[in-house]
Amino acid sequence: MNAGQPYPEVPDNEDESRYLATTHEVFNQPPALENYNLFDQDTALQQAVHREGAGAATEDLRQFGALAGAAETIDLGFRANSNKPVFNTHDRFGHRIDEVDFHPAYHELMRIALENGLHSSPWTHPGKGAHVARAARYYMHSQVEAAHCCPVTMTFAAIPTIRKQPELAKDWEQRILANGYDPRNAPDSLKTSVTIGMAMTEKQGGSDVRANTTRAYPIGAEGAGQAYELVGHKWFVSAPMCDAFLVLAQTRGGLSCFLMPRWRPDGTKNPWHVQRLKNKMGNVANASSEAELRGALAWMVGNEGRGVPTIIEMVAMTRFDCMIGSSAGMRQAVAQATHHCRHRSAFGNRLIEQPLMQNVLADLALESEAALAYTMRIARALDNQDQEHERLLARLATPVGKYWICKRTPNHAYEAMECIGGSGVMEDCIMPRLFRESPVNAIWEGSGNVQCLDTLRALHKEPETLDAFFREAAEAKGADRRFDRFLAQLQNDFADISDFQYRARNLVDRMALVMQASLLIRHSDKAVADAFCAARLESAGGMNYGNLPSGTDPAAIIKRATPVVG
Image 1 (cartoon, rainbow, N blue to C red):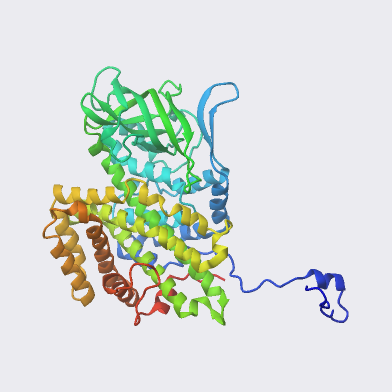
Image 2: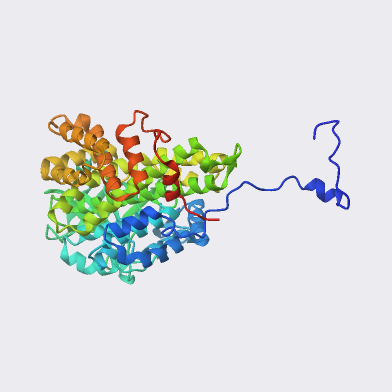
């Protein structure tokens, strides 16, 4: 109240003190996006599940979608991120324990994930749609909280590698695949369910694991399945409370793969020591650590000197989960932005009805659906590895998709945050967490350049992978002239790949776009496919969001992507 101005007149029969204390009424604010079904409110996900062969899992996915969207489950994600894990080197009596203490919300999220088979279902129930159904559950669960999905992914991805050593698989596989969660810092021999981590990189090498200096010394006989002691360090050990880890170390025969448990068979602590937890900008609910191995007992997995080929199937699976996780982050960002704009009014209209906001929202929705379509197509390929086309497609399309989808996520998260405005920057909104999480998958399991180099490796080792890729993309030929031109130009540019390393990002960018366009043309709503081709294959407006050209149908795209809640 400015000096000299009278107080407003108090209505008759109104208590003056109460009237003066009431400053305003809260209105024009959206309800919280909670107590909704993440499956039922995601048309693109429902269609992808049916299209890619997991229609039989619809009811199970619907039930999981209700669980993932419940207010209580969403709250777990906030609590897990508000309470970082704490590392304790010793107990109060002086015993070395190397224990990471997590908030109960983290453990509850882990319980939900493992009891619902996010780490196991394609291995325990293989067959039509197994990877697709599991990817759909992981996609919904990751939208609640992404960080704890790291140990879930590693446990899931470890199976193909551990199976390369049958005697180790006999001891470990049943417990790895058990749909239960046992977080105790106790010997694995006391547990019926275990989790598996991965320790590959070192300070001097990073992604160049062949520069590793950790040494493996045989205890007796040498070779596959034999016991060794590991001496060295690991720069990144994510989820250090896992019960065992797949580790790379040097032997006389070269870099080899080992399974290293946290405890020795006699129940004593294995001498690998966590030095500290990483202080990460995102992914904070999950612990990542640095560790020293001081004669840690481990068993060789696969042939000596073949560490990278042995562990590469695990890496391929974790890269696939990076695609799912980034696609999930995009979906949650779109859900938050469209939900907010559906309820919020400014300048005389709801935000969702204003042309410029429609352009941005529709463009964000395009990116999200394209990422999901690509990811779920790879899930179908994983379900059909006995078919040569599907095997070749998965080999090449996985690094391409991991590169592109994960790299598109950070700017997507930022733009969605901007749609919400100032409230989107507040820590009681999920958007800051989505934004901090958004670069993680692009860096984890091999950054962008590593994925491009792996694409080149696939082309050199199996040139027929490129034929499979283009054969799959070409299934959309004849439906859109913009697509046909884009595909023809890309195929022409692959006529000479002698300088592929230098041009890799440009080529891999376009490979991802042509596959996404093909999938949307063949399977999505016409408005989505048309806008994607116009904005990604032809438009000169650049790749910033909000550049859909005139003639597209943003209202239809937004309606398809918006969860109707409240």
